Image (cartoon, rainbow, N blue to C red; front, top):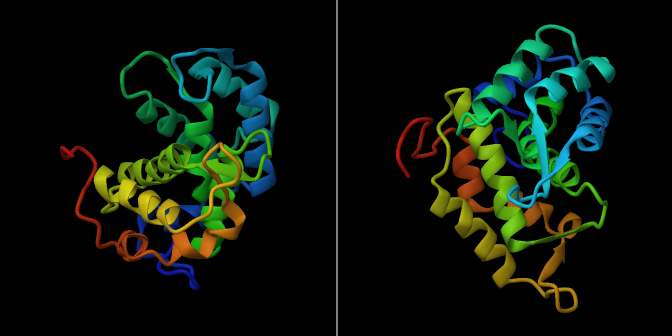
Length: 206
């Protein structure tokens, strides 16, 4: 996600790769929208959608993302996200996780974009569990590139600290995420993650 809340970083492999890929934010949004439109409804998926690899690859072609190295990188990420080998993934979780690849800006900008990508219905709000999902998705993608990342308990702590200090909107326990980007970006654990000082790596038990 970058090095700190104000400067881009190339310490992390995922940050370096974002400078190599050609995909832009509008293209990623278009690809997300296309993937949602071809996804199946599935109550077992956290977002309610199920995206197969075949449909994902077709969507990349349909949205003109089928170029190298983007096509190969995104295809391999899809395969890694299919952790159970069921040949489908949750598209919103996936796109929130890979969203930093379409941004070379600072941590706050990457966080905001990831939340916007996940917020498919453009509500501008997020609850505690969905925030954990987004942060874990970014954490997971970074781990696939060999970056040192946070443990799940640390990711949960970031969300808990944020919601403990916020007024909820109505009775749905949500917050306006755009008002809280700087709080997330400047959280000590986020700083630990973006500086490459995480305590977990891909393949380690949590």
